[in-house]
Amino acid sequence: MNKHQNVEGTVWRHYDVWNHSAAGACVGLESWRGGFTALRGILDDAQARGRRVRAVGRRWSLSPVAVCPDIMINTTPLDYRVVGLPASDISTSAVDPSRLVFAQCGTSVAELSLTLESRGLSLPTSGASNGQTICGAIATGTHGSARRVGSMQDYILGFHLLGDDGRHYWVERASKPVVSEAFCQKLGATLRRDDQLFRAAVVSFGSFGIMHAVLFEAVPLYLLEVHRRRLDWPMVRDAAATLDLDPLRLPYPGVEPFHFEVAVNPYGAKPGQRGAVATAMYKQPYREFARRSTGDVTMVPGVDLLAVSGRLATLVPAAIPAGVNSMLNAMMKVNALPALGTHREIFDTTELVGKSLSAEVGVDLSNAGAAIDTLIDVAGGYPFPGLFGVRYVQRSDAFLAFTRFGTTCTIEMTGAGSRRTLSFYDRAWAALDRARIPYTLHWGKVNNTTCDNIRARWGSDVDNWLSARRSLLTRAGRAMFTNDLLAKCQLHA
Image 1 (cartoon, helix red, strand yellow):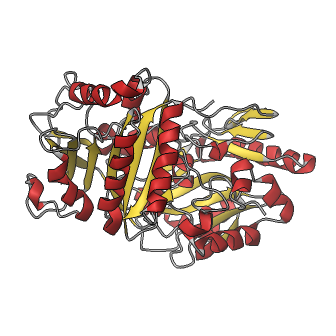
Image 2 (image 1 turned 180 degrees about the vertical axis):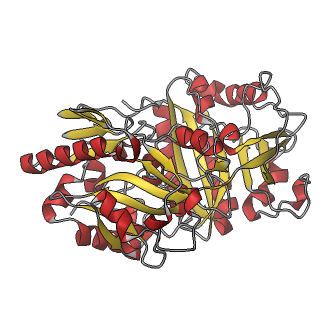
Image 3 (image 1 turned 60 degrees about the vertical axis):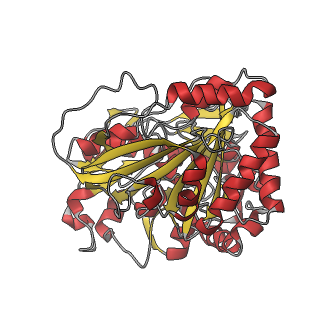
């Protein structure tokens, strides 16, 4: 069962994989090799038996993207990570070897942030919480709201991929080579410098093989200065639709926030109802500072709305608008002073309360206003126990990333884990279709992506993704790294 308790299944065989061997724990720079060898053994056995395989991390996805009834591999014990690579491992002067991070697939975003902060470094961005594994996050296209950074997959430089027939590869862009042959020899991997393959496999939700490790460049440690304002939605609406933030009277006029998001109460969208909470985060150079207690604030900036939605599960339909209003008043307290913290401190682990659901659409900024208006109208006619979260991310060039628009406005619809929430999602998607608003859906959240609509959403990039997959895997390999979701979208062949 996943963390949010909306996806479950029975598996023929489930493996926990660790970084040790029969001879004892591995040490030093080779401490990843025991887990890697175990993964290869599992894949060899699976291929011989004609079984399908899926890797699973922290079980953070709300879709069946990682579900497979044959073999599932728990990768969370594979948490080896190292900061800084020797110059001999690098083939370019375009990166700083001391800031390069090699992280195994099971390393959580929280673990990475702790390791980096202790060395004066930080992730460029992450999702609203840090519970996912690094590979699970990038494989499903997890994003934050750092407009000039993009999604998490957009700062990945390369990755170690285990395929079929015992083969494994180091994959990076031909247009941005990073590692040396010596580095690949340490892994024993075949070097594949191929932009098309990279753009396909980096967001492929386990369909190109098992992603064993990734490489990225961390950034110097920074602070985020967080300002939040509780406002009427009509006052915020034009800013949310255009990103012209001047009317919001933010603390630094003319300065683009590093991160901007809006929480929207669809049942408080009229003047005087204060149905929007706008959050702007400004990036500041790191300095020592006195950390403020947040004990008097139930919800602090950066906490995902999933932490709230479980509290709404028991509301009957007629009580939903009042219940959401009451919950928002109690939990979305606005700090009198700006919060200040590192990326790790601001984007902390979500504490889930009960069953919760989340679906997320991506639309072009030019359609943001119409899309939000449409979804508010749907909620007005069919109340669901939940809220909207609106964020902004620059376009990703990964073929099946859902952040595919120039500036993608992401609209998260987070609610209690109930049939009514699922029914609301069906109505929301249908309303966007009727309004002819082009949109995509997040692979790691509840979605209705099928063979009937995937090409309308991703166009010719579906064929680019399929072509890259066929170039890497044999027919047997494609059959091994598949599941029901892939088949439903006709991405398995």
